[in-house]
Amino acid sequence: MADNVTSLFRSTAAHSPSMAALARESDGAGPVDFCIPCNPYFPTPAMFEDMAARLRDIITYYPSGADTITAELCSLLRLPPQCVAMGNGSTELITWIDHLLVRESLAVPVPTFGRWTDQPMETGKRVDMFPLQESGGFALDLAQYAEFIRARGTRVAVICNPNNPDGGFLHKHAVVQFMDAMADLDLVVIDESFLEFADAEVEPSVVQEAMLRPNVIVLRSLGKNFGLHGIRFGYLVANPALAGKVRSMLPKWNLNSFAEHVVFMLKEHGAEYAQSLHQVRRDRMDMSGQLSSLPGLTVYPSQGNFLFVRLPVGAEGTVVRDRMLTEHRILVRECGNKIGSSSRFLRLVVRPQVDVRRLVSGLEQVLYGTSRRGAAVPEQATGTGYSSGTAAVDRLVSETNGAGMRGLAAQAAAPGLAAAPAAGTGMPLPAAASTVRADPAGGMPVPAAASAGAGAPGLPQPAPQPVGRPVDRPVPQAVPQPAPQPIPQAVPQPAPQQFPEPVPQPVPMPAQPLAPAAQAPVPAAAHPAPAPQAPPPTGPTPPGVPARGGLTAAQVRGTDGLSMAPATGWPGPQAAWPNAAGMGQAL
Image 1 (cartoon, rainbow, N blue to C red):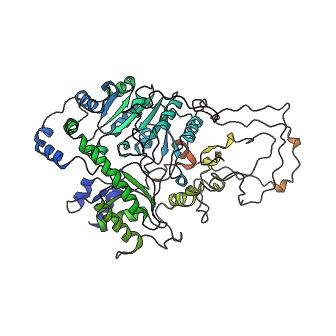
Image 2: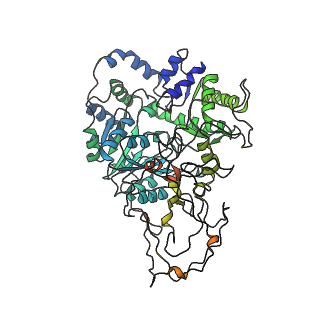
Image 3: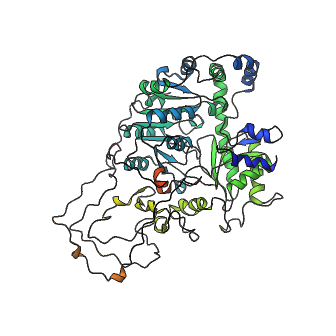
């Protein structure tokens, strides 16, 4: 495959060029595809032969209306048609959900499927991005996510289960509890596009529970599950009012004749479909084991039909991607343009073992230097000599995010992003992020104003703490600081709140305000003048840069627009979970 094929990655607005474009630029045959998450075992060869025999009629005539195709699908899934809306791919449904049901703001964990961040931003909505931490295996903590939503005042919440690209999985009971806790939001979307490939639970879907709730939509894919991305079809499940609102806006012939033909074929091929899912799950375990044997390569647990891997230190994802394509005719998904990820990560689709052996062999040659062009990992395992076109993002992931966001806020001393820090200190946050600090319980950034005593008049202020580091751990400071003065305990002051606390706590009020004179006198020289606040960075966020400290897209781009919301709906530490109506029902 010619070297100029890799220029297609730089000329496309998508994350990768289409297989048709790659085939046109090569000898007419596309590469082995580890990029597009497709079921390699379905449809069966007999089904393809049937479609080929009927090709003339399929492409010549109009399909039936969407109601007819939806009714057939619902008879297979045992769902009421009034609770289902079928779309020309899940992306069409995401677009209509955004236009019809997202009024002002949407929260989503990142990294995730890009349309959940890009679509609402394209229509001027505020997107509150909750960063999944590499140090926690990119697992989503629903309690922290709920607190984040309350603090931001977000009106729509999204969960992808399993998540794309890492394959993280949430059990059904936890998702149902989250849905009920967010019952006062405008909308909760559970994207189950890859759930058919999960085997961690017998009945993991929440479609039955969604139909009983007024503000929940479950999104499902068909192209991914059936191995037919070229046939754009997917569906959503919700209560009749929500589903009908979306269905009423869809064109009558938004589903094509191929989609109709496949849907009506499914009732005769249920056993083959179930076997294909079983085989994908077995291949996922085998592929994970083979990739884990490569030195320095980290493979994250997944319940999707793909694996999220971190390349060895020093490996640049775009270089690995291009060399795998040009030298080995293998297409992989480099994740540097995913918000919350970086070019050190690849998403690799689960494929049959014969293809996986070819993938592993190619990675060995590209990463470790058994090919004529040498290794893509300079100074293996030393952590030095590392540079790439997205070096700032790579530092953020490899030196900070993986260890809990070390010292980012303390280093925000220049407009925008400061100069590259010393090794091991991580990338500084923009000044706008200095109002965010880490929850001492671990991981979740919360507004600094919400910490006890922050900004209380007349009280000495503690030295700024690095984001993500426990507050009781000593932190080296660039300028020596005097020991903080003791705070009188008898007359605590309430902290000014930027956002409501997730669980409001009563704060005792002092009998009389504490006068400034109550402080012990401190020599002026011991308190240097604080550095002026740097303005937030302007312009679009570079591709691959995570939402810094969990800031909204608007804040990252230099604007604000946060609104306050009552801190209600999520159970407190002592509160019991709400009863989940409909739990235990089988799909």
